[in-house]
Length: 116
Image 1 (spheres, rainbow, N blue to C red):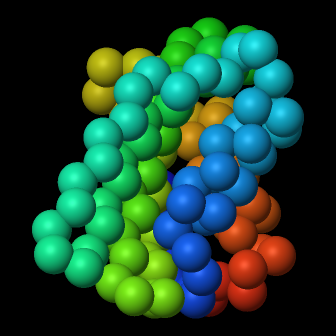
Image 2: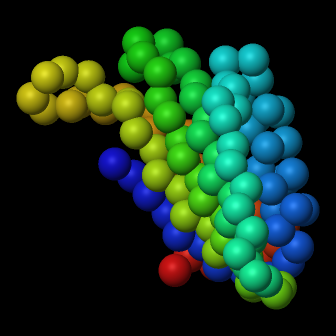
């Protein structure tokens, strides 16, 4: 399962909207936000979003789970993609998981997020 962890500065609501907009514009109608959860504990915010997209080349759906956690102006983003493999034993992948995950890094470049 491909994953990425990023850290940066900013306002969590802007980061969330940037991610949502990126996936709706980059991947179009075959990508959907399945659900999201927001929790606030003291001065910290946590959002979890699950996206799903159909990839014809892999003949299946790929999921992307993104958690966005913020304390004051520090924001941490973790993303894990899954489901892009084919086969019962070898899970041969056509790159769908990596492609979906790349959207997270692309979306957060304008905020100068760095890999952890």
